[in-house]
Image (tube, rainbow, N blue to C red):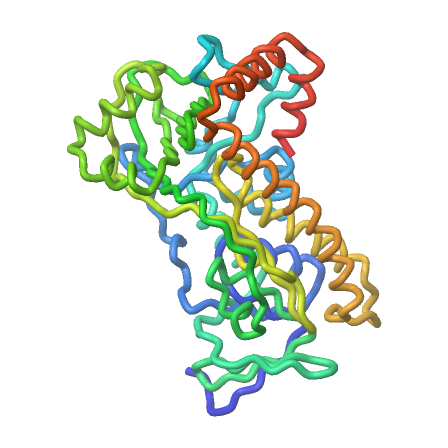
Length: 396
C-alpha cells in the first residue's frame, strides 16, 4: 500500500499497459531508462491458458518487420509458437472477376509474409518479457497531470506523485492523457461494424490469407494453426445488426455465400463479437513533455491489417531516437519530440489514405469503376515485378 504523498521520480512514465505500452517499457528499459509503467488494470492476459478447442477472438497480423523487432526485444522468446500461423500467401477476390489477385511470399523470395497470432498469446509474452526487464507495473489510475518547464507531474489515485521528464501516452483510443491535454482528433466514421469469429475449416488453408471485396463490405479469412481461420467481416452497421441477430446456421450460410466455400464447410468455434469501425487521428502527437503512441495517436481501418504494427512502429521510432540521446540530453525536449512527430506523421497519413481509398474504391456502385478495379487486379497478376513490390510493401 502506498504511503501518503509518496513521490516517485523517473526518466519516463508510460501510461497504458497494452501491447504498445508494454513494448515501449521493454524497449526503454533495455536502454537503461528509469521507468514507471502505469495502468489501471494489471496482468490481464498474464495467466492465459490456451486450449486446443478455444482460440482468442482477437487476433493480429504481424509484419516481418514487427516480428524481427519483437525478437530483438526478447518478447518473441515467450510467444507460444505452436499457436502462430505463418502467412504464405494472400488471395484478394473482387466480385467482377473469377480469379483472385495472388500475392505469395515466393514472389519476393521471402519465407513468409508475416504471421497471425492471438492477442492473448502476444500479451502474455510481453508481460513475461516485462518481468525479465525488471520494470514495475503500477496498478493505478492517473487523476491529474501538471506540465512544468523541466518535468511533468502525474498524480495517481493511490496518493502517489510521479515526476518524470517524459510521458509516453499509450492509453488507447479514448486516451485520458490526450483528453487532459485537450488534443483534438480528426474523426471519420466508416459507418461499418466488424464481425469477428473463429471457425474450424473443412479444408486446409495452406497458410493463405483470403480477402473478399464487395461494395462497402470486406471479409477476411485469416489462417490459424490446426485448420482454424479467423474471420473479420466489415459490413455496414445496419447489415451487421441483421447478421448478428441470425442463428448460428444462418450466419454460417451468409459467410459461406461470401467466401464461396473456399475452405469447404466451416464450423463456428467460440463466440461471435463485433466492434464499430472508425478512423481517428490526433491533431498533434506531442505536447510539452508528452508523446502519444498507438491508438492514442491514431486508429485505422482494419482492412489493411496494420493497426498494431503502426503502433509498434511508433515505439520503434521513439526507441531508435532515444537510444541516440546522451545522458546530458533532455528526453522530454520539445524539439526532440517534434522530430519524432514529423517522422511518424507520414507513415500514419499514408496508411489512412490507403485504407480510406480502398474502402471508397470497393464501395463504389459505378459499373465502369468496378470493371477498372477488376481489370487492374488481373493486370497485377500478370506482372511479376509489381507483385514482388506489393509483397515487399505488405511485409513492412
